[in-house]
Length: 196
Image (tube, rainbow, N blue to C red):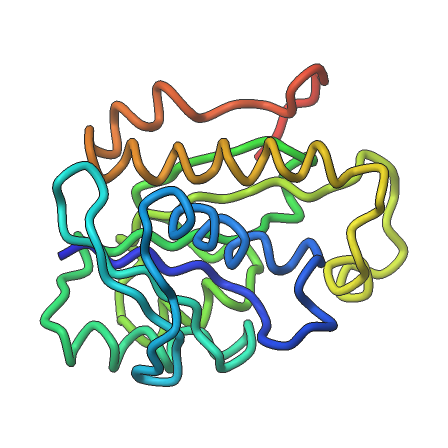
């Protein structure tokens, strides 16, 4: 069984913030594949179903972003899920808005949710889908920016981006990481910005 974990913060006040893109992408997958993410398990909200004929658990840790791993490690242990079957989806301030980067492994690159996940699972060989949120202008306070509501003018772009991210996860499950990277890794649409 695959485990797709979207990282974010629980609570209405965080629902439409850049830091919750992981939650939004997992919600979109749930919507597309008729999976209800309502069951509480290991301090996460989870739902189980099928994506392209493969059994998948969708999870949204409810521990707050910086402790994501403290939910995912027990969840994986309880259900016998190997690290190779885990896909983590999260926002990335190092990438421009609407850029997407699938990586099969690597450091947390300063992302606290990923840092917690790597520490808890004791490996950095975790497939991740990084969703770019950098606005393209200097940010005074990164922590403040990721928790501020997404601008109304960006909601249409957000909808497309979340759909694209859901497609990338589906591709990882159905076709494997290499093919998904070829098909879905992209710079910010319409922008000529190099990203990390």
